[in-house]
Image 1: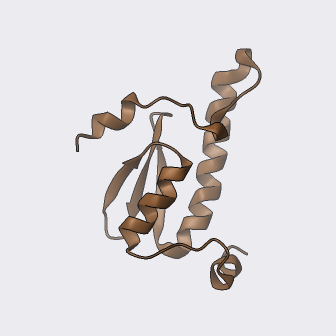
Image 2: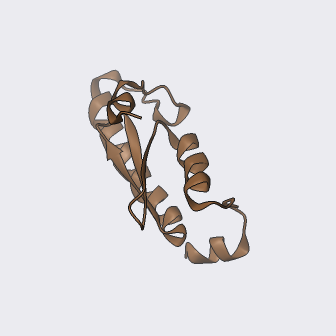
Image 3: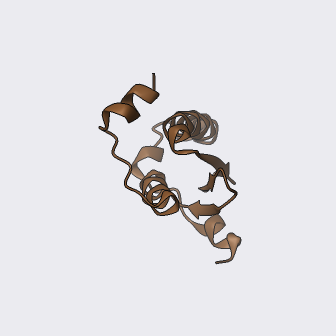
Length: 100
């Protein structure tokens, strides 16, 4: 798939809603950076990492160099499971312990 497809996606995921229209651009960027940091912390035990792509989508990468563009937070988890080849259980005791 062409990487440009990820640039055309809208930012209509529920997690990206900002109340103040005058501060929307700055708040959205700050919120995306914070979410990226938190998600990377949760993905680290699975040897995965995301990067913000043009403030419109994310690039998910494995330790071996595989990369996929995903549109929103829900897409990150689905794609992470596909790239790793196993289910990611957010309630797994070992996974929760690795976050501390």
